[in-house]
Length: 198
Image 1 (tube, helix red, strand yellow):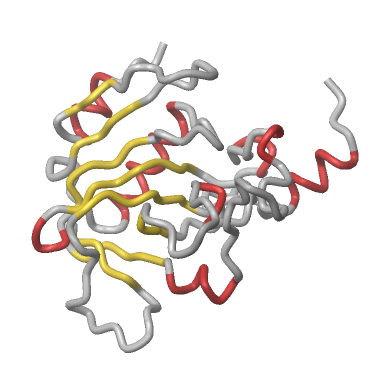
Image 2 (spheres, rainbow, N blue to C red):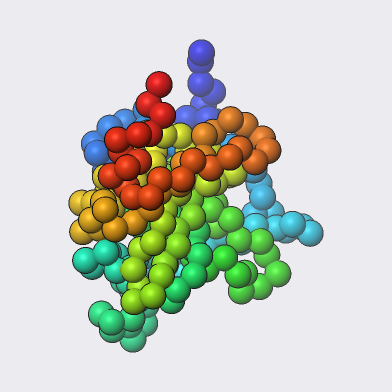
């Protein structure tokens, strides 16, 4: 299958290699084509973050707790409030999250954070009391990340200091349009052992 010059240019916007050093065309998950141009003005315009706004959305994990990294006047104790967030992992391995409530009339989706560029994974995460990571999944209609993307996310979370026995994982098979059932795993360890690899 040949790839058009436009498609190659679109893919290259996400970076040449990911955090694992693999070529982007083998490891990145790209936003689905029918969402391109969603940031154009109109009744259902999607909000895209500027680079400065994107910096404010970067998060880190300290002993399983989720904290904002670059918020103005943020202290190390300023973690994410309990609730649900959409998250993405950029090709350089950075985690970014955004509250699901829009700050203006434009819609907020997974594509909001990276401005439609390629990613390692995207989904939802739940933060509990004391800023603890409770659950992470791969539920994104814009990117539809597969099992390998979620495995990379769990690997990067573990590498960032989140114990695999301390947070749950939800896996949504990328079966196309509609709402496929999420497979829930009590812990990331359970997910790694029992994920539907075949």
